[in-house]
Length: 83
Image (cartoon, rainbow, N blue to C red; front, top):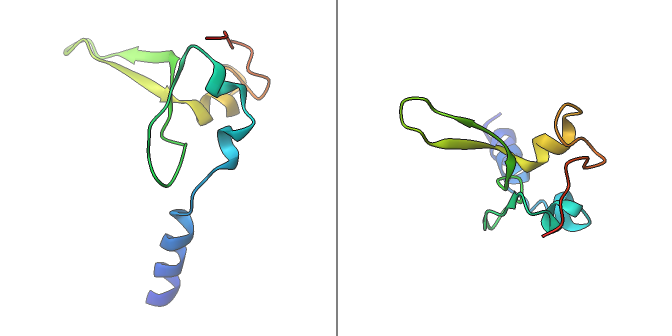
């Protein structure tokens, strides 16, 4: 069982190059890339964020989740604005 769990961790760390490779997200003015060696999923979308009332800091949504959510950008990228 331990070998299986290590195998699953290794699979989850594989590079995810397909997510934004052909996506208009990289060309959008709201896209905030994260230079992570294993995945693009850590990139943020500055179009969708929440302000913490105590600290005043803004926490932005992950871009891949915004593209999956129809109430946000959705698969068609309805809030896309070119850089």
